[in-house]
Amino acid sequence: MQRPNFVAITSIAASAIFLAACSKKEEAPPPPPVAEAAPEAPKTLDPALFLTQPLVTEIYTADPSAHVFNGKIWIYGSHDYEAGIPQDDLGSHFAMRDYQPISMDSINGPATVHPVALDVKDVPWAGRQMWAPDATEKNGKYYLYFPVKDKQDVFRLGVAVGDNPAGPFKAQPEPMKQTFSMDPSVYKDDDGKYYLYFGGIWGGQLQRWKSGEYKADDEAQPAADQPALLPKIARLQDDLLEVAEKPKDVKIVDEKGKLLLSGDTGRRFFEAPWIHKYKGTYYLSYSTGDTHLIAYATSKTPYGPFTYKGTILHPVIGWTNHHSIVEVDGKWYLFYHDAQVSNGQTHLRNIKYPIEIKYNDDGTIQPIDAYFGDDIPAAAAPAAAEPAAAPAAAN
Ligand code: FUB
Image (tube, rainbow, N blue to C red; front, side, top):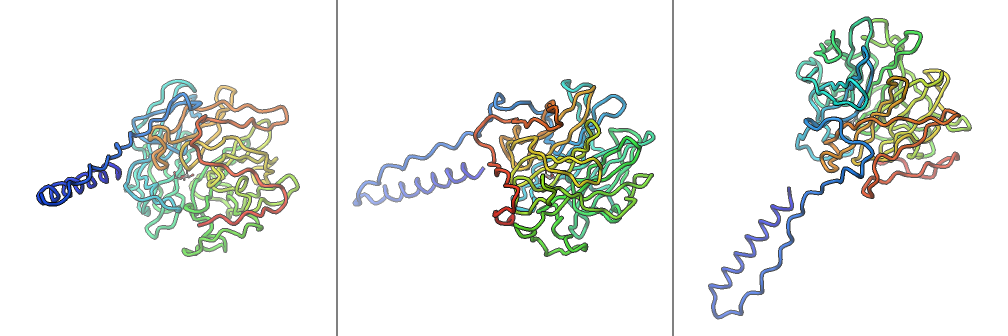
């Protein structure tokens, strides 16, 4: 939008100079008008460069958390929109206000966008920025878990309950006790226990809780040669409305059992923790944020430690990379987003048609390239297993 204004102003100024010069006949003729650069045409990304296409285009959508409820696929995600807020490292431009679930009858079939199921104005304690949610089901009730900043601008996790996967959901009057930061995801284990995972650094505020208490001004990440901040886990109460225990760190270690370091930005946790279980092994997948990867680590328990294994998804168009993994009819699928529809505007994203995940015989996952163009954010190569020399992430 700035470019046409600039051209118009340049044009008016050039005309004024020209007219003023014409009125003084004794002076030398004016120089020929400076050739104006044509306004840049909006860049349109070639759909052929993308492995899969947007799931829906009538609204902007992001951060897909996919589940199968009663044989239907339900996707709970962020509802992006243009709030006109400038970009910053804390994600102020992600100013979302509500959630609209999406459903599909089959993995490649059409997707339906449902009406608003929860609005920020209906959450009594909420301030701004409804970010990546998740949902689960128990005994015919549906529970939507969501991060939103409270009226003091501190990210908290809320839960809202409904009778239908499409909502509407009614929010509990207070945030969930002992929860903080963002990107909640809920995993229902085979034994009927439900676990809440959450956390995200930078705009997700996890660094402000390093000491165990909230410190609004503490934006520092651990030094590069110190362990990185970690996602949290807590088992949920039977009513799924509160955690049943104090949230604990979910440890992510390298092949030698050492915690991943803060400077190891190609592998360390940044945001978007997600759990799935494949052949008895728990897979923790997450975004590496500023290196734009979806990485994963495995464990024999939901609490970890999880051992880093590799990359699932390489960078996509747009700064953020956020996903979920779900089994549908015996196959495993990666749901993800990018910014194809907005031609790369990072805060105006679209959930994509899912990609089937392929496991190797040893349980490792084959990495996926979902975009074949050159103009994607660069991802740092994973650091060596020894302490990384990379600088700490900037804030
Ligand atoms: O959508 C807002 C934030 O962007 C999410 O909470 C993060 O995971 C990132 O995708």
